[in-house]
Each structure stands twice: as C-alpha cells, then as structure tokens.
Amino acid sequence: MLNIVLFGPPGAGKGTQAEFLTGTYRLIHLSTGDLLRSETAAGTPLGLEARRFMDRGELVPDSVVIGMIRNKLAANRDARGFIFDGFPRTVAQAVALDELLEGNGTPVSGMFSLEVERQELVKRLLERGKISGRADDRDPSVIENRIAVYGEKTAPLIAYYGRQGKFFGINGMGTIPEIADRLRQAVGSLTEPSGDTPAHPGEPA
Ligand code: AMP
Figure 1: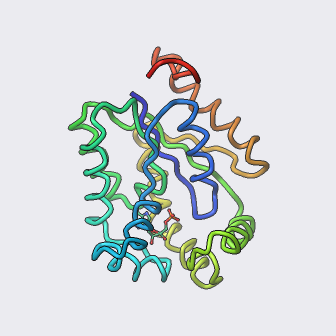
Figure 2 (figure 1 turned 90 degrees about the vertical axis):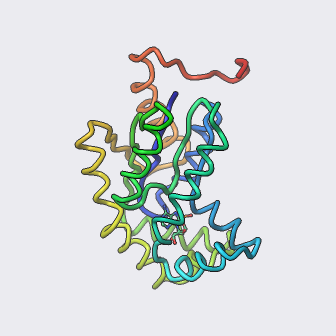
C-alpha cells in the first residue's frame, strides 16, 4: 500500500497534482477541503459550522476533519492506498492519522511538500478565485490569513515527518507537467526499492 501525504501552502497545487498521482498509482484521493465544501454545499450542520472557519481562512477544528478521515478510511478498507491532500494540517491531525493508519497496518509512506514562493501562491489563488467561485480565494486578506495559518500551524509538520525520515521537498514552481514529473520521480524513488510496484494504466485493479 502507498499512503501519500501531499503537502504545501494554499495555492501550491496539491489538488492538481493529487489528480495526476491518483491516475498513476490508482490511489484514493482524500481532500478534506473538498469534503468540507461538499458538506457546506449540501447545507449539513457540519458544513454550516465548518463554513464559519473556512470563510475566514481559519482551520476547521481537528475533531471534525479527523472524524471525516476516519470515516473515509473505514469505508475504503480494500483500497491500494490514499493520497491525503490538505490533511494533516496540524500536529494533532498528523498524530491522529498515524494512529488511524496503524489500525490499518499501513503507515504514511512519504510526505511530499510542494515548495512555492509566496508571491506566486497569492497570484495562483487570486487567479483560481476568478473561476472557482471560492470565497476564500477572492479576498486578499483571507488569502493572507490562510498563508499565515499555514506558517503557524501546518509548517511544523515538515519537522514532524522529517523526524520520521518521510519528508520529501518538491520544487513546486514551473508548469503543471514539470511539477508532476518531479513528484512522480520522488514518489517512484520511494516505491521501487521496496518492491511496492505502482499500478500502470490498463493493469487490472
Ligand atoms: P483547501 O481546499 O485544502 O484549501 O481547504 C479550504 C479550507 O478548508 C481551509 O482554509 C480550512 O478552513 C478548511 N480545511 C481543509 N482541510 C482542513 C484540515 N485538514 N484541517 C482544518 N481545516 C481544514
């Protein structure tokens, strides 16, 4: 099994790159941001509660996102592995993920951190806001807050995974295919020596 944490600040390209990796390795893509947005769109109590945090660029409480991930892992017991996108975002979430995966017998294989300059992040988020309609991608002060929250609460996970020998820094500047290539190489270096061969398109599941 391959369990990948795709990491980086808002606007680093995690969602875009997760889609490439999902296709290459046939993993299940779990984006807590997407899961929360479907809850808000459906108007569920959880979604309405989460929205208050999301619209301000603050993190939704750990218990909420950990609960969502726990449910998804339980619902996909026979998966080949997972790509975690936008999760974990705090040390408490990373500890919870380690515990949940320990229960499955399949730890995090690696954490791949997309490294992008701050100016470029703001540019990408504002561009995305024009088409995505996401409130948190349109307001510059919310974007600033999301980047600040990343620095304060999420960036410490670099050291957390570094201590476990699982941190891989990826240059996230350049074109989408260039970044996808770097990421594929890094993930490939992790899977091949262990004999955990990636799935190829067309291979039966
Ligand atoms: P994203 O789509 O990953 O940029 O997430 C959008 C928003 O959803 C974030 O700004 C947070 O408010 C919330 N969110 C997504 N994932 C998490 C998480 N793992 N922990 C807390 N809040 C999250």
